[in-house]
Image (tube, rainbow, N blue to C red; front, top):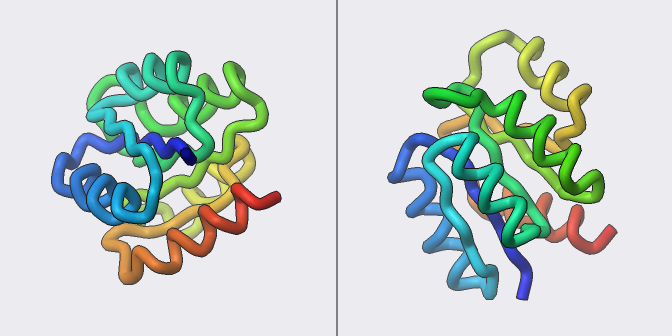
Amino acid sequence: MKKLLTIDDEPEFTELIEGYFGQRGYKVFKAGSGEVGLEIAKQEKPDICLIDIKMPGMHGDEALKEILLLRPDAKCIVVAASEGQGKTKAHMLALGALAYFEKPLHSLRDLEKTIERLISR
């Protein structure tokens, strides 16, 4: 079973991800902060990590770096509200994220296609 970790301080978003991907055979882990996400990543070794950027405590860029230090093969996707007109996206991709989606998501199907493509690499 494929494991997906979603790290986001918006419970509505993590619930949406859990419902959608849970129905598609993923085991979904939810974290409301970067710190909790890092602990789950250590224990569960998810195939995919969805990471928000702006969160209380550890921000998404720091969580991304830490997860990739633990598991260089982790497939991380940033899902965040738009802010820096491309600077934030470029920064996160430079840190090792493999894809970047802006909130609000217009299609969970597009996210699913990207995840499937990354897992099948």
